Amino acid sequence: MTTTDTRETIMRAARAMLQNRGYNALSFRELAAEVGVKSSSVHYHFPTKGDLAAALARRYADDLVVYLDGLLAASQDQQSCIRSYTGFFRAALLKDNRMCLAGILAAEHADLPVEVRAELTRFAEVNVRWLVEVLSLGKSGADTEAVQRQALAIYAAIEGAQLVARGHGDVAVFDQIIETYRTAGVLP
Amino acid sequence: MTTTDTRETIMRAARAMLQNRGYNALSFRELAAEVGVKSSSVHYHFPTKGDLAAALARRYADDLVVYLDGLLAASQDQQSCIRSYTGFFRAALLKDNRMCLAGILAAEHADLPVEVRAELTRFAEVNVRWLVEVLSLGKSGADTEAVQRQALAIYAAIEGAQLVARGHGDVAVFDQIIETYRTAGVLP
DNA sequence: ACCTGAACACCGTTCAAGT
DNA sequence: ACCTGAACACCGTTCAAGT
Image (cartoon, rainbow over all chains, first blue to last red; front, top):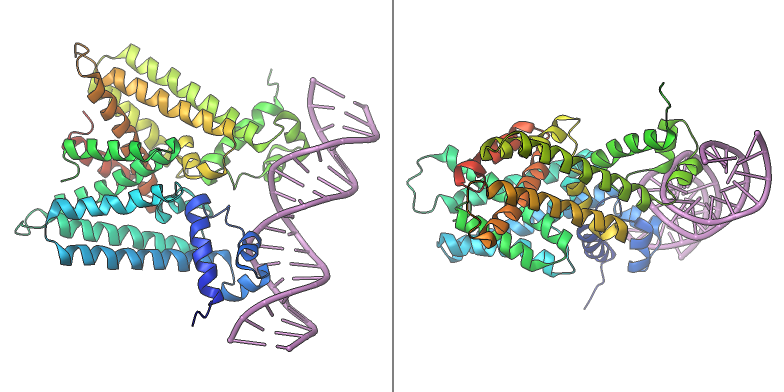
């Protein structure tokens, strides 16, 4: 039985719009038309655009955590973990030249309601925390300061690679930049 | 004599708005109110929002070229050149947590008219070309392929650092990420 | 040459009203 | 519980009309 949960349908369509065009371009009316309801009905499920974006960002972060923790559980190999991690961002570009939700929202930071900003902060934290874990593999918990810094640098570098590659509309640009990071030693 | 050129006043105000809030959030009516004219008057100088954004991006790139070429002319020291380069992006964050015009526009890539996209591409090219020059200092034009790749990686990494730091609303985050790139060897 | 007011089809949001 | 139509103040854009 396919109970086409309207709320769920809205979230799916909205996520695609958000990753493609960003927060300000996300239109309740356009969204409603795509789902097959009126825009006031979208407001019933998500009172404001901030509520919708925050819900999307929250789920986005939650899904990533599940995926990343699964990776670590399946393999303790640092390099393959990082490769899967960059693959997550690569996949967005492959899918209609989309961006990471956190990346595109960060650019619109000044226009975001506080609840969306909070989810954005959480997303970055979650990424850094996992990267620290991966970078610490095999190390007897020594220089945690340096590992923390490297994790943040990796996260920033990948977001930047995605931003630049998206401008070129070419995944190969992303791959090339990532590979340069690797040979430079920013990525393990 | 201060001929308060309306066109010039519009461009100054628009650039601040654009670096703060992005393309979609840039409002002709809000802009007009700030300048002290009607929005239809803004349309007289810039027929469409795309025309305005393209003009701003063009000038932004031109100004950067002048600045960067001046740096290279003044000093042939690689490290001080790169330090001034990162300083350019740092300055945007310092000024009201703004972003590089190209960075914020790249995130809104899907919504940009072609003329704006063209200026964005040119901006990236200009940056990479200058970085290649700096990275080649003292080298007898050997592995240009590798230098080209490193230049693009540097540009992407800095844009990413700015994006992430902006999310934190803290220039210190930018500085720390850049420093990590340096110790890793992505930046000379 | 430069500016304006009015109109058009859009936007997020609210709310009384329907089922 | 879920959806809608109508209204509000916004938006970019066009254009005839003013100086």
